[in-house]
Amino acid sequence: MIIEPRTRGFICLTSHPIGCAQNVKNQIEYVTSKGKIDGAKKVLVIGSSTGFGLASRITSAFGSDAATIGVFFDKPASPNRPASPGFYNTAAFEQEAHKAGLYAKSINGDAFSNEIKEQVVNLIKEDLGQIDLIIYSLASPVRTHPNTGERFKSVLKPIGEVFTNKTVDFHTGEVSEISINPAEGDDIENTVTVMGGEDWKMWMDALKEANVLADGVQTVAYSYIGPEVTKPVYRNGTIGAAKDDLEAKAFIIANDLKALNGNAYVSVNKALVTQASSAIPVIPLYISLLYKTMKEEGVHEGCIEQIQRLYSQRLFGGDLSLDSKGRIRIDDLEMREDIQTKVVQLWESATTENLASIGDLEGYSTDFYNLFGFKVPGVDYDQEVDEMVSVPSIQE
Image (cartoon, rainbow, N blue to C red):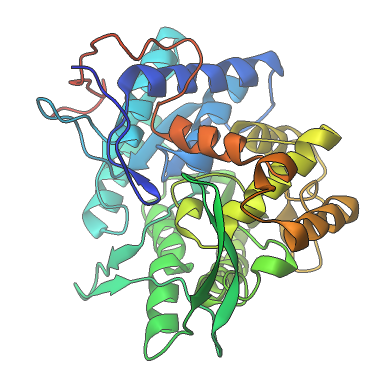
């Protein structure tokens, strides 16, 4: 079939297997071009199919020759219906890893569930024995609690008062004002339950109890802080409450890993175009202005550049550079004072009429479509493709 992008709001309803595969290959080429990293050799990535999770799996495998197990929750293709992009990404990653002689197996299912945790533990025992790095990179709007069966939904809301500010429709370039009502009822608690640190700790508890954690094991979860302009709706909002919980759990997990000479960290990453960030009002406008500024300064990074630097300079480079709250700050370039000052100036003047010149909305839009395998250089989108792609290690 010929696959074209079909969008609805901040979601693309289709994805392209060849474009997704080319994206994966491009990331692999970047990592291999930077040389080897003396990193972990047996790695579990929870949330491994897109964004920072995919970049982590690629960097582990092709930067450190690591054996990797990936956990993801994506829809496979059916006749005339493409798979979700994460499924195509994982298929391409496994194919490239196997070609390079690297161990790579994947489990497709709900990472919040006890069943998937048990499957992963069994796979580690059978194939790898123990693991020395766990990356936790889940981004889900809903969670069914594995112990109670109760289903929780996260919400993106400020806390305390209505938030009003600019946003942009990145499809049309229209800058407008948006107001978001504050959290009410159980909104905060539900969002923390979905996006906080409880599941990360449950994973680490299950792995430790099963004795599949190696001596010196490390685990890293990803977070975001961001600038003043997004704080009311992000860091000081319901999602920020969840991130606070995630960061608090890092200290508990680190204490639990002391007997194994291990540690747990939260890495605060840069604002980037991901499926999750596209859903957050205000963020697309901020990112388009940030991209423009960072590209002009020559310090722009995508997911793969961020994670390769996290691994090579911080996690395995001997200089964690933890902040006052014990976090790794790989958002250091984004939060540079000169960068943020410029972005604030641009924000104040941003309108529908001038955004194309003062921001990088085209870069934002391209990155968005790239997530789904579209607008990738070198891919012929007029050619028919086979949508029925499989992940080699998964028996459907």
